[in-house]
Length: 182
Image (tube, rainbow, N blue to C red; front, side, top):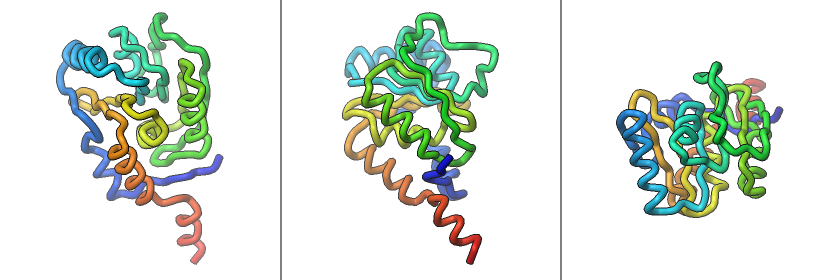
């Protein structure tokens, strides 16, 4: 397993802020607003990151093309039967990192354009940045904002640039190893 990026303490604080449109409210309120956005803007694809938001989207008949989950909050619940899955991929992605394995799985799922569930052994939160990097223009990347609601990131050149800025600040494992040996 090759770690491509590792989060810094400064970025960890920054990631507490929504990276896109924050939709606050109850399950019904957030899903109703999400459905309205989807119906009005017709995104090129939808990618969900996180167990609760992925489950809720499927329950509300908004079916992401790709779901990225770690089975942490919904251990006893599976995706609803209505969730179409053509492929399931398991990847390792330790907390606070982004692995090459996870990057390749997301890229392939986006390129193949089939309903894919990516199940992460570790933590999926930072993979939002990779989804934004590789999703087509006008796609939605949706993730949960704890104790608030959901965040919808509409993929644009500007959002890709912001995601890349975060990735540029993250420390690749090589840099961390060099510091330890010096």
